[in-house]
Length: 248
Ligand SMILES: CC(=O)[C@@H](O)[C@H](O)COP(=O)(O)O
Ligand SMILES: NCC(=O)COP(=O)(O)O
Image 1 (cartoon, helix red, strand yellow):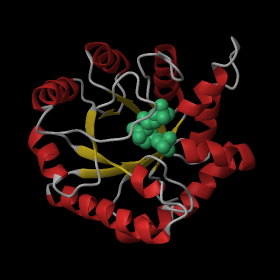
Image 2 (cartoon, helix red, strand yellow):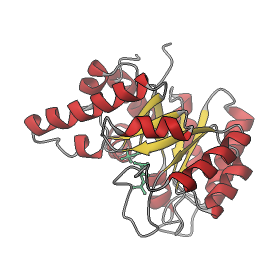
Image 3 (cartoon, rainbow, N blue to C red):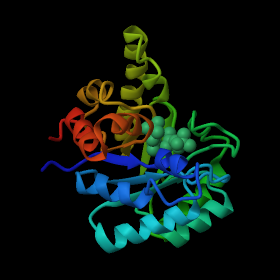
Image 4 (cartoon, rainbow, N blue to C red):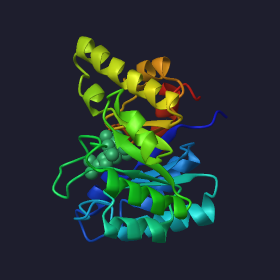
């Protein structure tokens, strides 16, 4: 079976669970189902207000992967605050994605201003490397940006694909946004960075992206995945996304 690029983001499962003081739907149970179905791993974004993923979820998922899925990967996303870095140190995920989110942001909707955030990111990157955690930086679809990420010592970038995903009903604009994502991916590769992609990716918009940038190594997908899973179920949705990635 071809290696998978798919990391399933389970933020939305946690948001649904948090509606009641009950343990279902189970974040770890559905994460296990996704990995059993072929996902490469799980991504979570524990935001400061714990609106969805809680710190306890992070430790439960870290324990699940350590005990049952040693060949799968856990990715933590977050702003590199002292509290988040403490969580990274304690949970020791395989990868961390640093995002420039304010606590009150509705979702992640922009990449770093690398020239403005240099010292914050340099310290966070150095600490994460000490913990043997792969570092990825959230990056706007801007081909000038990856060089700065590389100079900061990041191993990967994750290209913010929200603007591309938002053009689901405008093919001409989608083509323009796709060009920006591809140019950014190619720039990242030219600077020796691994290339991830994420935000508002779907089975409909993934094929065109991978046709232009097949070297993208990981796609973390949550919102569109969860929407499809309500129709097709978790396991079949993993298969659908892996088919869209040309993996099965
Ligand atoms: C970094 C990114 O684009 C997404 O993982 C985002 O963090 C999702 O966060 P919410 O699920 O809180 O919208
Ligand atoms: N980093 C992107 C991610 O984890 C999921 O984003 P989305 O698919 O929920 O938009």
